[in-house]
Length: 150
Image 1: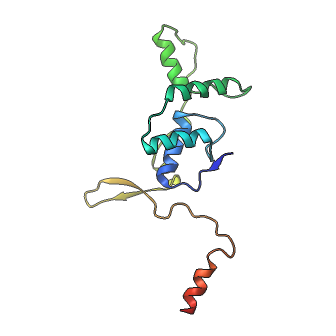
Image 2: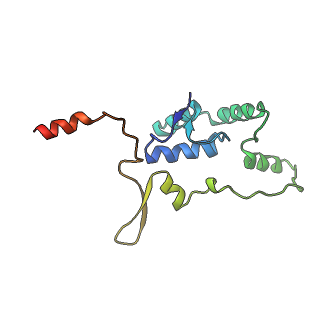
Image 3: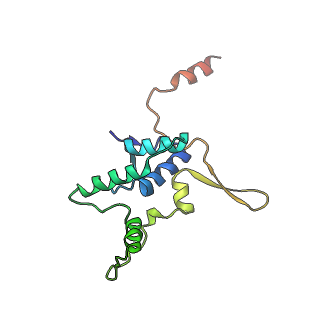
């Protein structure tokens, strides 16, 4: 069962994006976290060692068992094959997808804000409060009534 990413804070949302696009790339979308994504994120946050080659091999094997889809880690595989003398002369280069570039727009969408200090140094900080969440009808009304009675 996948977990939604919209409940994550800015730091964890950025970590999930990096995990889902570079460490364990998938082509299913990044709106939800898989258990493998959570596992990798937990190791990064806690500083515990991670057997990354094992995860990469499992991810490649999972991708090859699908009928449709692309093989992950294409750039890494190309470098390894080139090292062993296998050349790719007829390949057509493809451009990067807009979603694969970290810029001001993508960081703002992930919940970060740009702050300028007095020395014109730019810092990116997580927004206070994160993303707005839907309020369930009747939830939190008790606090309003107690404040009105006091």
